[in-house]
Image (cartoon, rainbow, N blue to C red; front, top):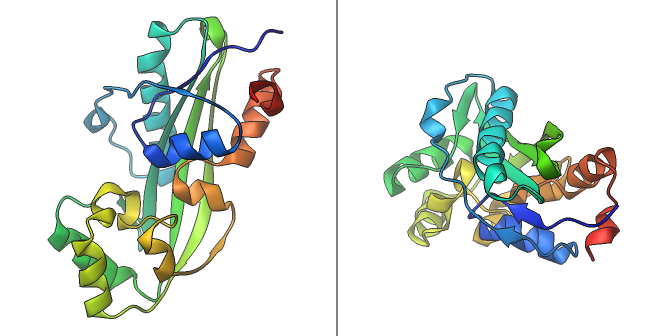
Length: 196
């Protein structure tokens, strides 16, 4: 089986960097999928539907490629959080999350070449937030980083200093579970090492 082009249907630099570090050189083609068309209250179902929408929006443009779509949200106290709409929202969210535990869900949709098969999976990781002060929260939000991240934090950036520990897949919290992707590639008949 020949190795197809690998297309990442996401503008996320963190997802791209995870793939590159794992030896996969993706062609980045962000999806124009309208996320507002998906209204689901279950975080696992939501991220899977969003990932599928993104991958399937891009796949027709790359018929001979593998296309990966991903989406992440943080589930906390029965609510689903994507990117905060403003610094004020990010501060308020952090004031509730500090010292607590959230669950980071990432949906993964992998479309096979010629759209012969589409695998849709999700990964969840428990995130334990540090009991940070208001001053630390305000400084973190002022950095701008939380405004671009599901759950208002980036574990691979400045926000990593405010995470006490995680339970589950580390790369999932960054936006793409590499172990899950490896299993999805296996299921479609590819070895992750084929892309090196």
